[in-house]
Structure formats: structure tokens, C-alpha cells
Length: 212
Image (cartoon, rainbow, N blue to C red; front, side, top):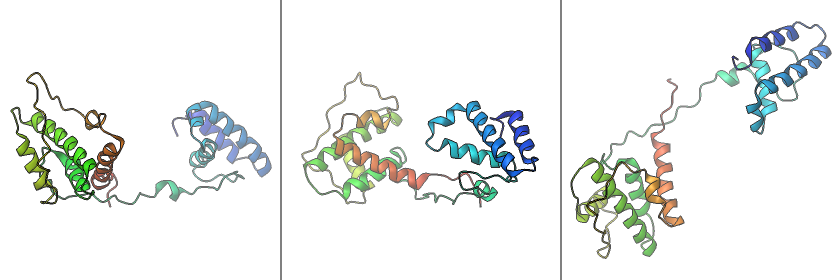
């Protein structure tokens, strides 16, 4: 492990060669203390001592006979590939909005029809208009946004007739605002809906780095 350096590597190898196990246990404790000094950042982790003892096993090639205060790890514990994460290949209905918006629409459509949902619909519509204007340097009517919401939901979510979007100032510019910029002005329950949609998107779109 390069972060410990060659001297620690040699120390562990020398401890492995000590014939007396009691003496090995005594010496390896001193080595672990030095390892902790060389890597103080590990102290911020709640199980940093456990990690140090695991690192001893890695450095030794899992071939050191000592009495560890923690369960001894095996090489398979560190070499086993993680389970593959399924990737969502479902095509986007409107690529310029992204999958988060598509998920938001589904989440909101499942909410009870009340005043709070109307507020969330309007917040989402405002954000969708921003996203639309980022990639389409022109104007867009609220009817277009509302129609997109209905299409994204498969007809399950129809924007109430009393909801309208405020006009946009000619001086207002949209330079790819992050979703958090829009959610900062929302109520806690509204932000929760946006986060839930984002979490669903992360679960569906996460790509695993290991190949079968």
C-alpha cells in the first residue's frame, strides 16, 4: 500500500519472520501505531483502528499469523467484485428536460390533488421553462410547458386551469441553472418531491464499473 511507504512494508515483513507469536503480536501493535501516525486522516473515520489492522493483512499478503483485535479479513473480502447495478435504458420522452423531470412528473402525478400539489406543479413548470430556454434560445408559452407535462405523465397529470406562469423579463438569462437553484425557494415538502425524483433517477441511471 503506497500510502504507508516501503519502511512499513519492511516492518511487516520482519514481523512475519519472528518465530515467537507473542513477540509478533507485541511488535505488530507497534507497527500499527506507526501506521496510524503516518495516516492521520484515517482518525476521522469511526473504525479507523479496524482499518489499520485490515491494512496490516493486505500489506502482509494475508500471510501473517497474529492475534488481531478484529476479525481477520480474507483476500476474497477485498477482491470480490460488487454486484452489478442495473441501468435504466428506458428512453426519455423529452431529452431536453432530462430524466429528473420525467421522474418528477411521475411522483407528482401520484400525489393527492390538493393545493400543495398545485404549488409543486407550478414550481416544476417554472423549472421546465428554464430548461427549455437554455437549449432553445427563444420564447416558450406556458401552454407548451403544460402540454409537455401532460405528455410526460402519459395523460395522468393535467395542469389545472388556474395555474399560470409569470412573464419572463427580457433581461433574464438562463445559463444552465442547477436544480438546487430552483428548489431553494420551495417549501420543505416541495423540495422533498424534487429530491425523491432525483433519488429515483440515481438508482435507475447509476452505472457500475465492473464488467461481468
